[in-house]
Amino acid sequence: MLYMILADDAPDSLPARRATRPAHLQHLRALIDQGRLVLAGPRPRVDSTDPGDAGFHGSLIVAEFPTLEDAQAWARQDPYAKAGVFERVIVQPFVRALP
Image 1 (cartoon, rainbow, N blue to C red):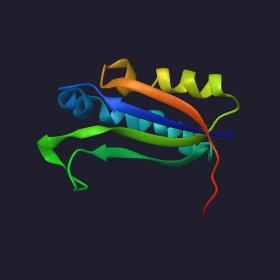
Image 2 (image 1 turned 120 degrees about the vertical axis):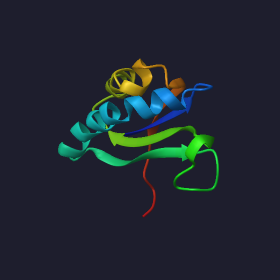
Image 3 (image 1 turned 90 degrees about the vertical axis):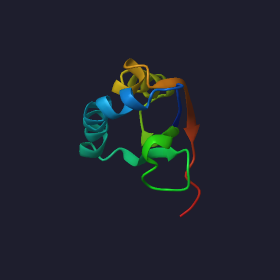
């Protein structure tokens, strides 16, 4: 089943986000290699693909996992979560209706 991982960044976490980004991308790479990642990306604070020092609201990931518990465990192991970049993480089932 698909699950949505919606994460909100902690205040002043942009330096940690930048430092941890390579490890975060490597964590996502496993889902890509397994064909389980539908989409992933940051949520910028300003209307720009490169918000600079304005930073990010957080991230959104949609991926396939066997169970909700597996999705939650994967989210807990995300380097951003472990480094304190994420202040809050919501993991919920997701049904792709379109396209």
